[in-house]
Length: 67
Image (cartoon, rainbow, N blue to C red; front, side, top):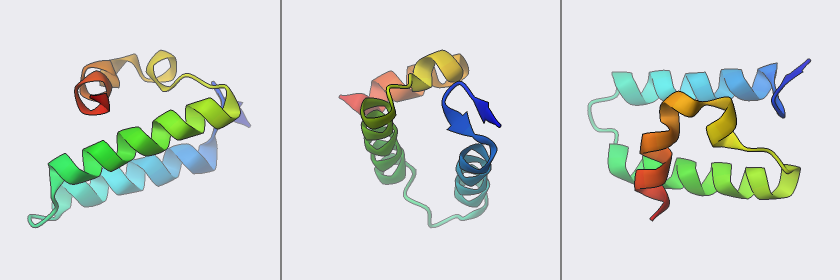
């Protein structure tokens, strides 16, 4: 089953990464958010998906780190 171009497994991977980031005090949030946006941008390009349409609540963060 897919939701807006992302499979349930891919969504679970993103959630695990998020949970890890929240729990680790040495986690470099700025670096990993930039890396996340790079990954999502490339994924959208390759799969013809749109992360911001699927997760509009993350649009502000996405735009901020895409620069």
